[in-house]
Image (cartoon, rainbow, N blue to C red; front, side, top):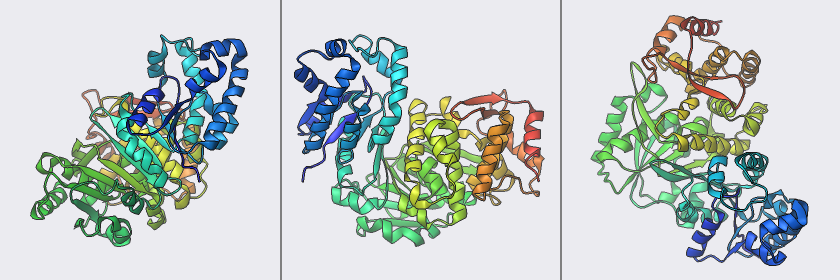
Length: 519
């Protein structure tokens, strides 16, 4: 039986030729479709377009590429930017490992502006063509490689090659930002297969930080690959009330007592609270040790495990003490979602809803259309949300501007958590109420009504507990850690895909939006 090939897809200027060079250096046989087409047609691509027109060129391309993919036996292949427009080509791709080299329109144009591209004579052509092809790239990709660094594929290649041996449906995201890069795997039953592929576990001893509830449910199931080497720090983490400096101190002291060194690493197994707390401890222990995030809840798998934000709470506010510490890897085994209580799954869904609102397009359509939360049917949502967040982090790792959009619904949501002492609501439930306030402040009544209906559909709160005073929420708002001398900046959104960060709002309007949340 023929072996799958690694097939690089992506827009003009995405770096497919450079990716092939990395594959050749790794000993793979490589094929570049543009070279084959020029040899087949006996002329440069630009001349072939001029002589045969796009339709004639695409017909010949579909025949050549389709046949190549159907008979390919291993190796690496780089398709032309428009090869995926062919139905025959798309039908031949599922047996291969398809790697999308992601590039934005501005970077693509900067790279190809001086070349002869018959379909891209200007920046406007690039934006238009990329917009039409993006849905195809997204749908076909088994792996997405982010980042403008042309050497990134060489570093990601071992993980790309491993995909063929991982459970069917597993997807890889290679996340890149200013201070580093790391693999994100999303799939079912990953740990054992990673061990067999030789990529896992990494060197050093894993010091597992987890809460008693999660460890009791899935410790043995997930940790078989570590074969007794894991050092377990079982901490009574349960919600924000246990994400404090005292909790961090207890974990750090346990690491020191058990002899953790800088050659070891932290394994954060659990939800968002565990990930934040364990990541913070990894950052400060002996001035920094690696952390591998293993998110087991929906809120962590769609949002908090990525981007390197860590932190603990103070009485004055949420995440008042923290650091940026990118993970060494994120392993999101979506089988764990089936172990969650329905209320916990619903609370995590709020972060997916928020991300859909921010991203707009296909992700918003997918999220808004979910009638019932089936843990077995959320893999594509988890991966899409992870990709969106990592794109934002790549552009603004240290929260200087764009990354603020990820706080949609969180400004009021965090204030609600603080006002209730972090005991009344799960994080996602507080953000659900905060989303309604943000959409009221955005003057988007129809969208607010739709979001409220979606929240009700999933048995999520849409009103404040009557015992939580409006003034307590407003007082907590004034302690928001992103507050500047000008005031608290809100993320507003009038339509999906169009967030506006740092918006100052009249205090009377903020009060009215919070008062509306009372029953």
